[in-house]
Length: 407
Image (tube, rainbow, N blue to C red; front, side):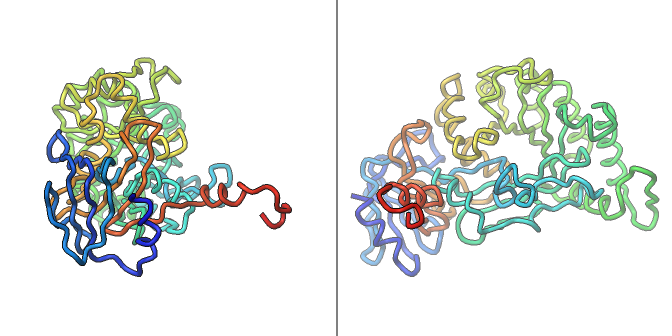
C-alpha cells in the first residue's frame, strides 16, 4: 500500500505536513514500541506521535501498516563526501599526507555534497553521519564534520578532534607508541596555556595555527576521538581526556572490554567495530564478539560503525551481530540512533518525540536483520528518493537485448 503512493508523493514540489500512519514505532524514549501508531510531521519536525491520532485533512499520508518505523540511523565513522573511490587518489581528501598541518586540518572544506555514495548509504537508512579524517602525517589527524544525507550536506564543521593511537601511529611519531602518546600529552598541555605572542615552536612542534586550533578545541566541549584497540593505549587515552576535562570517544576498541570499568567511570563512548572479533594484529589479541555486550553491561555508551566492510551498508549488520552476542536489541538500536546523537552533540536527533527532527525510516521488517530493507527514508520531514547510482545501473542493465552502446 505504501509503495503505491510514494512515487506520487516524491513528485510533490515541497513538503510541509506529513503523516506516517499505522506502523510499529520505536521512539527510543521507551523500550516498548507503539503499535499501530501515527507520526505527524510539520516544518521538518515531529509534531505528535501516538496511537489513535487523527490525521489532519491537509497532511500527506504514508501508510506504514505492518512496517517498523525507527529514527534515522547515524553512521559514527564515515568518509562520506571525502572519499569516492578508495584506489583513486584524486577522489580521496580524507587524509593529510604531506603538509605539516594536524589539529587545524578541517575536512569540512573538502566535503562533496554530490558524492554518489550519499544516496547509496541513505538507502540503507542512514540519515546523518560523522565524516572523519584518516591517519596522515601526525597522530592527530584533524577535525571531523557532521553531515546530513539529505538537504544541506554539511551540518556542523569541527564536530570532533580525531587522533590515532593504533599500530599505525608508531610510524607517525618516530616508530614508538610512547613517542606518539608523549607528543599528544605535551601538545595538549602546551595548548591549554598557549599564547600566540609567547609561543616559539621548535623543530617538529605544531605551528601557531595548529596550537590555536588545539586550544579552541580544548574549550569547545566537543569530543576527542582516539582510535585505539589495545587496552594499554585506551587507558592512556582516558588519562589524556581526564587531564583536560574532555569527552572521550574510543574508535575501534577491540580490547575495550578489558578496561570497561575505567571507560564507564570516565563517561566515555566506544565506536565498536563488531566484526573485529579476531586478532588481526597484536593490538587486537584480546578481541571478542561480545565486546559490545560487556561494555554495555559496565555502563559504557556503545555506538556503531559499518566502516571497513563497505561503509554504512553493513551498519545494521554490525548492530545485529552485537545482539547475537548478548547486547539487548533495544540498546543496539539506540547505539545506531539516540546514543550516537548524544555522543556527537546532535540535539533532538535519534528519537521520535514532539519537537525532534523528523529523521525517520520505514522498514520492511526488523532493521537489524540483513534480509530487511528501508522502504522509505525521511530526512527533516522530506521523503528521500529511494534510488541511487546502484539502482540506476541495475535498471539499466536488466534488459541485455539492446546493443551495448544503448543500454
